[in-house]
Image (cartoon, rainbow, N blue to C red; front, side, top):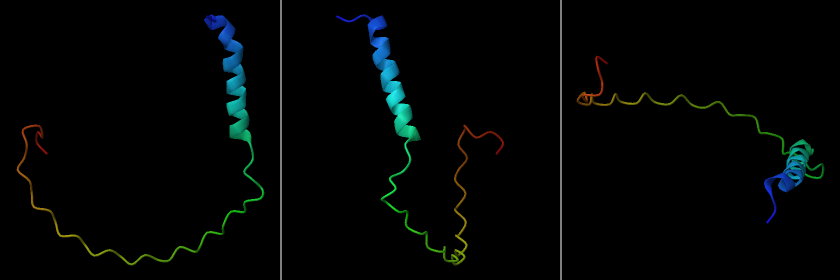
Length: 62
């Protein structure tokens, strides 16, 4: 069985590989689609107020 000390280089190698993946630039062949202009959203209708719920014993002075 391998000891923990001998596994350390493998862990460092894996960490380097992960850092490389993070720093890797995006694929140049895939061009990002231009984002469409956001349409102005119509104002939502005001929602009816919910009925007041009976106060639970956990809510103090709310």
